[in-house]
Structure formats: C-alpha cells, structure tokens
Image (cartoon, rainbow, N blue to C red; front, side, top):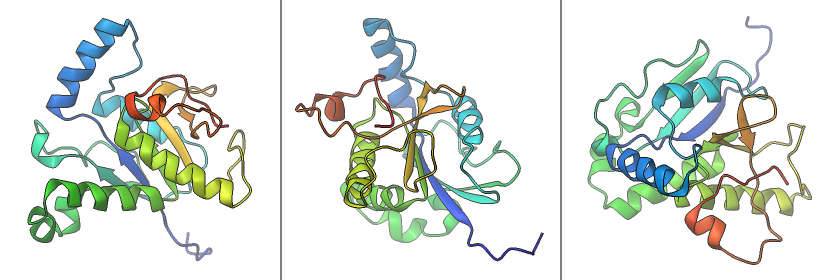
Length: 192
C-alpha cells in the first residue's frame, strides 16, 4: 500500500522437477517404499505458498537445471504476490550459459544460501548442502533451532509435510556424526 518502505524479500526454491530427477526419484520411491521424495511443480508451488513467514510481494528465485526441463513454464502458476524468476527471465543467460556446469551450480548455491528463505528437497545433495551452510550461519548467530519462530535464514523441505500442512522447517542436525543424511538425503528432518 506504499505506507511501508520495507525491502522486498527473496526466497530461493531448488525445484527438482527435471526429467532425469523425476525418473530417478520415482524409482527411488518404489525401491524405498517412501512417498515423500518426488514433488511436481504444482505441489511445490502449493507448499511454498503455505510458508507463513513470507511477506508479500516476494521474489522467488528458481534454482533449476533449465536445459533438463520438459517445458519452460516453470515461472508460471505462482500465487499472487509471488514473482518467480529463473535465469532466462533475469536476462543473464548469455553470461550464465558460457559457464561450465560446476560454475552454474556454484552461482545457484550462493543465491540459495543467501536467500531470506530457502526451500528445497531433503533428498537432494545440493539442497542439503545449502541447508548446512544456512544452519552454520544460524549457529554462529547463536540460533540452535528455527522451530516455531521466524529467526531469519529459514529453510524448508517441500517434499516433507510439516505440522501446519505446509513444508517442513529444516535445519541440519549438527550433532549427527555421519554425513550420510547430507549425501543421500532423508525425509527425517526437523528444525533443530
């Protein structure tokens, strides 16, 4: 309404909807007898829109492997007040496309790690590493848990349903002595 001059937040969503991932995760769900690995574009949009600590309007940065998408409608279908952007829409494709895959991944990682809110898939190594980075920053700020409060740097897993029906809040378990969860993923995550 113009009465507040607050900066617009941005959230980063690591959308695992590429065709190679969908084939892999469907097989993984079948083998492991789990139902919380794969999510469609519509399911991700629905869950992200249920995050309560977002001020609207909000910019939604989509970290997705554009070249592996079956269609380029990834920025359409978002709720009112959620303005979705991916590399093509930002106008940086010429610069971005000249980079090797690892540089592209590093750029997406930094954008996701610095977002006001991050939403990813708990079975993705990339998403797990982003949440680890964000958890380390929270620990340095003296915040050991993000349960039930907006502490900044919130992270969510869209493939796991939280207590409120939206995505599950997510922090890396820094007491876990194994890197297996980070490397291979799990749906057993929490906010502390």
